[in-house]
Each structure stands twice: as C-alpha cells, then as structure tokens.
Length: 233
Image 1 (spheres, rainbow, N blue to C red):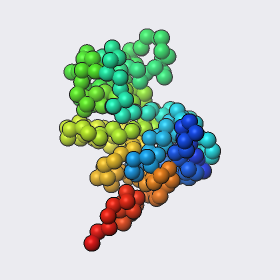
Image 2 (cartoon, rainbow, N blue to C red; image 1 turned 60 degrees about the vertical axis):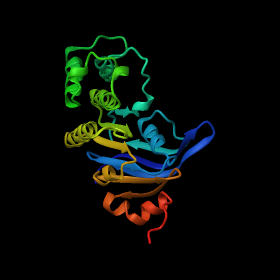
Image 3 (cartoon, rainbow, N blue to C red; image 1 turned 30 degrees about the vertical axis):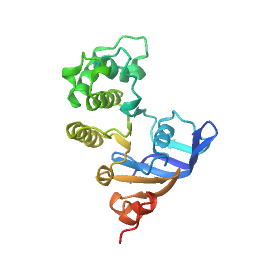
Image 4 (cartoon, rainbow, N blue to C red; image 1 turned 120 degrees about the vertical axis):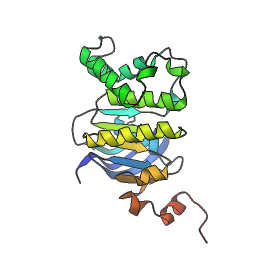
C-alpha cells in the first residue's frame, strides 16, 4: 500500500510537556485513516505534527508529495464572535492560493461555492458563523478544508456531538474525496466510524499501540486494555 505520510521516531509536545513519544508509523494514500485512543493519547497533537503546525522535537516527518495539507479543527475552537459569514469562512480556504489581501478569482469563487454545495450549506452562505448550530458550523469548517484543494485532509473530531444528518453528510463527503485521490486522516472517538475506515492508528499515552486493518486492530481485548475498561465476564 502506497504511503502518503511517514513518521520515524517522532516525539512532540507543548511547553515542556511531552505528548507523542517516538512514533513510527505510515499513513496510506487515498484512503481514510482513523486515529483513535483515550483522551490524552495524542490524537490532536499527531494531526498538528502531520499538518506542520506543531514541530516535532525528535524524529522525522516525511510527506510523499509536496502538496498541501488542510487541517480542520474541532468546532468548539471556533470563535463565535468573529464577524464572518459562512461564505467568508469557506473562502478563507483559498488564502493559501491567493494570499490574504488579494481578491478571489472567478475560479476561487467557484471552488468556494462548490465546497459549500457539497456540504449542503449554500443556503447558509450569508449567515453569520456564530449563529449556526453545531452541525452547520462544523460543515462550514469542513467546506473550508475542501476549498483548500489539498492532497491531505486532516480532521480533528469532525462529527463528535453532531446530529445524525450532519454526521452522515460529513462522512459521505469524506468517502467521496478519498475516491477523488485525497488522503484523509481523522481523529475520532467514534469506534464505529473508525471500523469503517481503511486504516487505523491506535494511540495510548502518546505511543502507537497498533496500526493496520481496523477489524484486526480494534478488537475487544485491545479496546478493554487501552481504555482500561473492566474485563468482560
């Protein structure tokens, strides 16, 4: 299986606090890789390292291509007081192509409209981001990620706490973009979603416990041990 990103002996953390400890792993290309593990396992930190917004303190991160990566953060991190419409928020995904102060081209605007359409939020384009429901706001952030037209799409808990409709729309779009040649790396607490991924990384206390086929990695015994659940009778 062709890899998109490779980590060799990578450690990383924040302000004298180590989070990831010598991770060596492969993220396969053109499929969805789910990153799972308990709170504090290092899922968000791993996404930040792969995106290049968190610097590794040891080891090497290698990308197969020189294409860009788009990072979609949790909706709870969005500042609701920012005076942004949905269209403005999605258009921010084009800044990497046009720059902060240049006007969007006709092609840029077409990409923005297409991204909103895929997430079913075109009718919300003029609404303020802070006025939206959690599911609507998260769809706007995923649309912003799509608008970047990146080779690698990184998502931090994209469907946690959302209603069934928003979860289905986001999941369907992620499945579509992998078929179009995008690699998806998704941190999630949803083990059902992880089992439907093409690949899984199981983290525990900043270390890689296992990786590979979700059906082989996410066994009952592994889940009980990593999440420190009571043993079944």
